[in-house]
Length: 292
Image 1 (cartoon, one colour):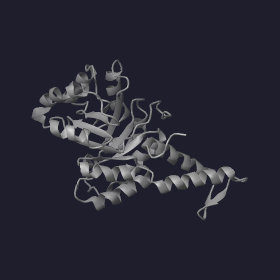
Image 2: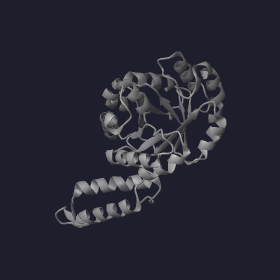
Image 3: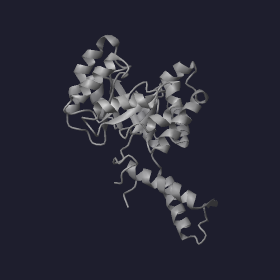
Image 4: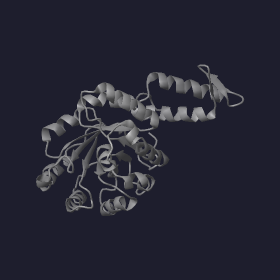
């Protein structure tokens, strides 16, 4: 499969599901859930009094055999804290690290470069996923996206951000921040992951938000609940109808003497064909079409 703009083989990051670093049974269930990214949490999911215990408890799990099509991740504490620095040193010293690190409270490129510098002598393939959770992070999203070749995705921490903004978590309140994140991610060829939908029983509300996110250009969404995974994957995977339309557009534009054509009654040209090829590449990445 072709590499992305960072040189890595593309992997799916549609769903990112989180559990406490102390919750072994929950972690095992998440590894079997079908989620693309399964993350043990040393930050918000672990109480202050148990952070050292959680770090010592969970890191050995990454020495276990990898799980097919699952990115095993670890959310560390902020590198601006003592616990965060201890987390980083512990990860750097592992013989078998996680596949990805989630870095909280990233406000600028230097925050991320600090983490990359600590890891540069070890674990060169370890992905970094910065969490953008405050106004500084939103303002500096492009610089954060380009701070290191290790960055594979941007993660909008909508819960923390809404607290910073003193807003609710409604669509209108977070729209500007989402636009900044998805523009930065698309510019540098990164996945863009939205924060969790907190009401596990409101699948209708989740579906509405997923449709808006996919239309905006997001490629994934975080979750705390296994029952949300199917809806999340569906939202960020091209449908058979979309794949068929993309193929018709490419054929019609390619066959046109002028570069313009009509498909299903709508005018299309080489710009539409370019978008169609992107959709087919995404469908290949998602495993719904075979590689040509």
